[in-house]
Image (cartoon, rainbow, N blue to C red; front, side, top):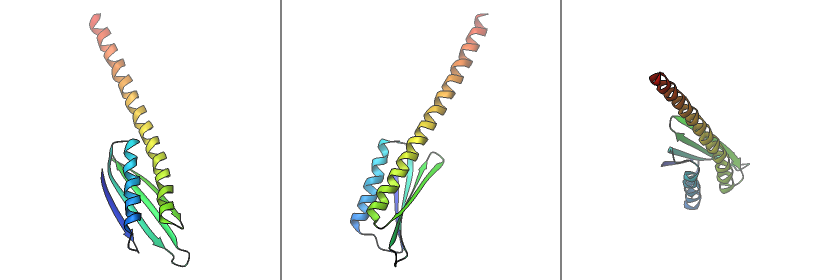
Length: 119
């Protein structure tokens, strides 16, 4: 998995960067088909100090996106990782069911062809 890290409107500290990258690396246990991950951290509204974390996962032609805001980057990263974990689990289930349906269809076609050959 290729990880691309971007910090907008601020300079990211090493601890924030490492926390984000290590959290994203843990997503491999949910689905190993992740091709590329974009981590985008941005600092908005200095008066309110809103910190945003966004993750884009590129998975076999599909892009899963999650975005969260909070007062702290670590909290934003943890919240967005929770969202993307749920999306990734749902995507994995969807792909698994799609593959099962294809396999059933192929088995049925094989049985039909074999029964025609026997006659």
